[in-house]
Each structure stands twice: as structure tokens, then as C-alpha cells.
Image (cartoon, rainbow, N blue to C red; front, side, top):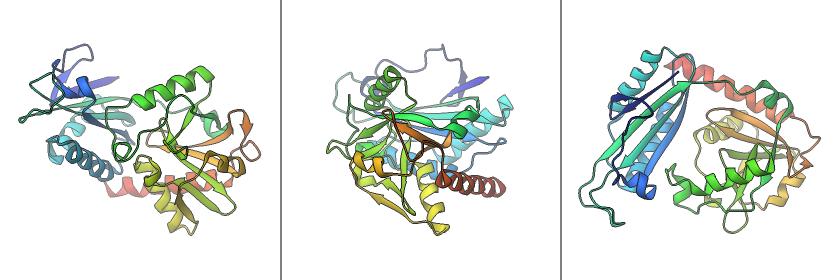
Amino acid sequence: MSMLLVNGHPCTLGDPALPVLDRGYLYGEGLFETLRAYAGKLPFLDLHFKRFYQGAKFLGIKAPSRGTIKRQLAELLAYQKTPNAYIKLILSSQGNTIRLSKPQVTSATLCAYLETFTPYPRTLYQNGISATIVQSVRNDSPPLCWYKTTNYLSKVMARHEVEKKGVWEGILLNPAGHLSEGSISNLFWAVGNTVYTPSLAAGCLPGVTRYLFITSLRAAGIPCREVSALPAVLSNASEVMITNSLFEILPVVAIDGTPVGNGRPGPFFKKMTQLYRTRIRLALQDR
């Protein structure tokens, strides 16, 4: 089941919704947020809103109010009666010229899309996933990488390489050759008793789930350091994990055919999973 609202009006996926002069379509001048609904509720929505409105300000797009977006989200969830859902918000800048120069007067289009969430296979969590260091493209540099824009070509090209190699995820490097993030995820690894993740300065998206894991680890007394690191550090890691809002956290057990640690999900993955599930449970109680 799925449902699409364009500026609050129901549409089908086949309906024409954006004009040719839409700047998101022409130039990638837009934003998106990916949300996961649990039992009809949206935990961590305020964190998603914070990044969404920061991005709108950065791009100079006038976004609808939080109240407007919340009403549309509630309409999606109520209409579909879908307790567990995948939701994507897409904000696109409008223009009145095909030229690159930004028009003086612009509006925006908000698309809110919902479909039933299908859980990821249990085997991914039990056995782990394989990954590759992406060679075909480097990640975007700051500040562009700090915003979830619709200009996603570096990630698209990374996914092409991932699919060609037959692995599950691709780890992108920044222009200096340091670790940044996954094509659809943030990256964590463990060495000794410490968990590491690329810093924002290294060129990764400030993921909502990334933030929740960092703060949960530190609150539990587990050191979590944000660093700039070369990909060689992963060869010394006992565990590597990736995170995002949909699959939450997955263990990486092999990178370019080389096992990570003992090649099995380890204690940090299990502990981080427990911490996140607790964080979700508490967030749902508050809503």
C-alpha cells in the first residue's frame, strides 16, 4: 500500500506533479527526509525536522510550517492505517526560468509519500552484510554533504558500483581519501573498547540515527570518537557497523572480500542494537 500527497493533495505516482521548471528536477535544488513509523508513531521527528529546516535555510527554500507537515504526516498514517511505514518527505524549489540563476521569487513543492514498511530480512542482522570501498566516485565535500539534498548523484553512482560488485553497501571516501559514510548509511567501527565514526568535518551526513547511536553509546559509558581516518583502519577493526533510520543498524562482516574481525556480528553490534531499541521504546512512550 502507498499514498502520495503533493502540497497536501492526494495524487497517484503516475500523476504529473512537478512543472518542467522545478529546480529540484533541473538542478537537484531540493531536500528529502526518510522516516520510519513504528506502531503508527514517528519517533525522533523533531530531529528530522531540525535537519530539514536547516537544509531549507541553506538552500534558500521557503518550507511549509512544522504544523502543516505534521498534519500531512498524520493524514498519510490515518488514511493508510499502516502501523509500520516508510515515509519520504521531498521539498523541491520552484522557479520561473530554466536558467541556472536563482529566480528572485520562488515557491516550493512538498511531496509526502508513504508505503508499508517491509522489515529487512532477519538474516542480515544474524549473519551480517558485505561491503566495498567505493572506487568510482568520491563523496561530496562539506557543506553539501551535510544536507540531505536531492542532488544525490554521488550516492547513485556508488550504488551502481555496489550492485555491480554484488555486495550490500558501499563505503565512500572523501576527496582526501578518508572514510566518510555509506551510500545509504553512516559508518561505525570498533577497535579495542572504543567505537569510532567519521566526523562531520570528514564529510558525512549528520544522520539522525548516527546522532542517536553516538549519544546512546556515550550515555552508556562506551567511548565513541568522531575522527578523520583512512580506510586502512577498518582492517584493524573488530567490528564494523552501518546505520540509518530504516534498517537501524547492520553488522558488516566483510569488506572487499576480507573478513571484519572474526567475520561474525560481535558484542558491540549487539550492545548498540539494545541501546537503540531502548531509545525507540522511550521515544514512542513520549509521543
